Length: 287
Image 1: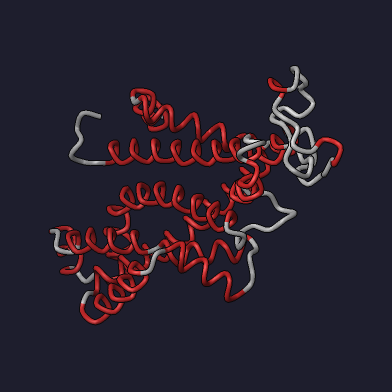
Image 2: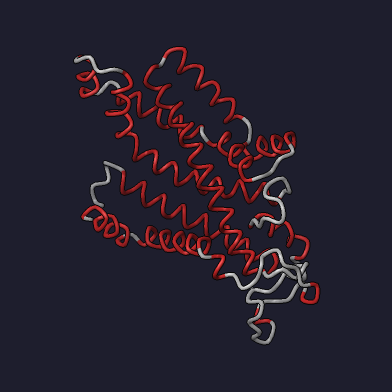
């Protein structure tokens, strides 16, 4: 309870942290309660109301709050359900890439030698290829674009920052006195890693995870925009952008509102991540 109070006290002392928290909380609540907040089925088409403008351009008619797309589907409802997809993919891909990156980074830094060299060369190879290009080619080759496939592909291209950062930290930690003392009294490698290494790299892992989630959401939106990500009838912000790109000159709202949501989500997560980085930095004593 005391730690929770301290957390929120530090959070609300930071304007960027507070802004990020509010944005992320708003998007999470929108996704969780989309079923109750959405006035229409996101896939329901109304060909009599295609490309209907937002309510302030339509004489105050609140029937379709943010208008409809080229198939008469309610944009507000689709944005709410799109938040679910973005968060699910973002969270699962971040967890998967984090587990892979942490395991490889800790093993690489702790054991060194051939294992370290092999893991880092694999990381260099993955890092050398643009992630979005690698994901795009992979999805086109396997011709599968479900949520599970998308999560696996994004995780496969996102683990490198975890591995590199945690390897660097483990290289420093394994030479600390408390680690040497544990090794001297006969502690096993597994015990040292679990009891001494992982607790000390956890703050860095949290910060990287926050930034990685923002990247995962952008990657999912980009792949859906290019037509190889989330497919109908599932709703994705990137897919909504793709549907509206040819209508920007005449019906700007079809693409603008999902674009705003993507931008807001990335900004919110980035603000929160920057605040976490400052709070968890042991050299930042002012927080």
